[in-house]
Amino acid sequence: METDASALLKEGERIDDLEFKGLRLIQDRRHFCFGTDSVLLADSVRAKPSERIIDIGSGTGFLATMIHAETGASTVGIELQTELYDMSVRSRALNGLDGVEFYNMDLRDAPERFGDGSFDAAVCNPPYFSGGVSNSAATFTQSRHECTCDISDVARCCKRLVRYGGRLYTVYPTKGLFRLADALTGNGFKILRCRLVSSFENKPPYIALVEAKRGDGFSDTEWSCMTLYKPDGTYTDEARRIYGR
Image (cartoon, rainbow, N blue to C red; front, side, top):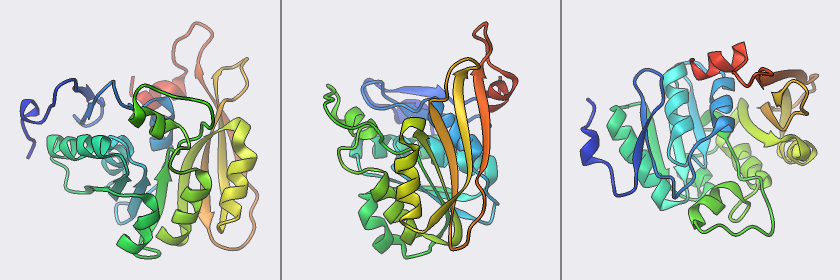
């Protein structure tokens, strides 16, 4: 049963309509809010209702909420920053969701908390900026910059949390793909699919959506591309489908 929004909001916060199954999310512009990369990542996840998925660095809860709503899989979000975790818990109450849980914890503690191989898949929109950046909002900086963890930390954590044969879904800047591949393969994941995303057709791809599988063996990576905007600035057909517009 949904909870009244006015009882859940704190000063400076807002409620965003996710435009999917009536879902809403509490956010605060003083902290990190989900963006295009999270929307595309959520759409890329393949899961069954019987599966269990963990969202590493779940922020305000967008990925865990959307993946559960789209696939029926039960989701668990872990978030180090208390302010973001608090918003995700209240959003869960706002939406009346039973198949989503959130925990305020460091990803390095997750294997001991949940157990090795306890998830069918993991999803992570990791911090991937480094060096020389200071933001007035410390929580924003931690969400986007490698202050507390990097992709290698994520891969090591997922190596234990994800069962053999399970998957890891992530998004990463194209300029860092070799670094991402090194972290994944070094922790027992092989990249199954890599989708390169461009803003416009004549622009180089700037991010990649990656699906990797935990386990031995070799298989060719399936490559594909997508473009977000037409020359006139409107969404392409695929982007419109993803955004539901």
